[in-house]
Image (cartoon, rainbow, N blue to C red; front, side, top):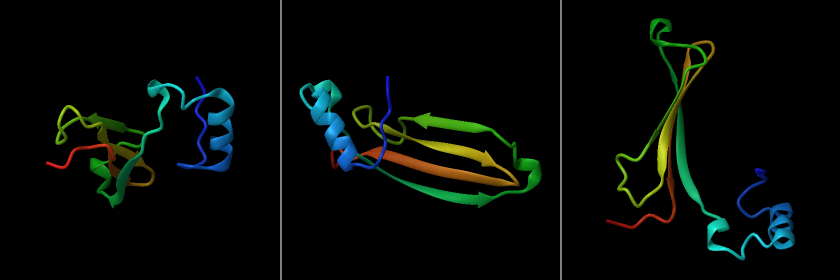
Length: 91
């Protein structure tokens, strides 16, 4: 498996999709998401350098993909983020 990342609709990505017929199957369809990230400075005693935590699901319903992440970075920073797929249904 190869990950080719240059943005949502980059010219190189378009060439690769056309060359290998990546749009010919619904399984290989591109999907889009939106997210946010905050950087928190936390007390050293609440920080574990290198710790990575991911979540999936809640508070989204089971038909919506997405999730959150917490990345502990040196010196005492935590990157907190949430991503949701743009194909969600408006409640």
